[in-house]
Image (cartoon, rainbow, N blue to C red; front, top):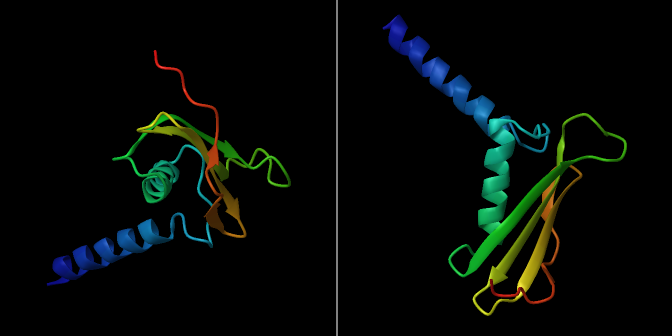
Length: 112
């Protein structure tokens, strides 16, 4: 009985840590598993990967007051749609949450 209770408590603890790892109360580290998972989640939420092809993803740390603290602060995604229209989407970490900007349309990509 005690072993089962301990297992349940352990599972609950792991779940709580996972949920809070990138919440507004905690910052995501640049190269952490949680940070990479957050990047994937945000890109899937804001880029239709069935209609668009992503060709570049870049993430950066804060360059202002928290410079060199390894805090994920900006995600930049370049992608093209089926008509070869080029877009850039920037997602910034502002006031404890990730906020996407409107995608910027760029010049058409040349076919290779």
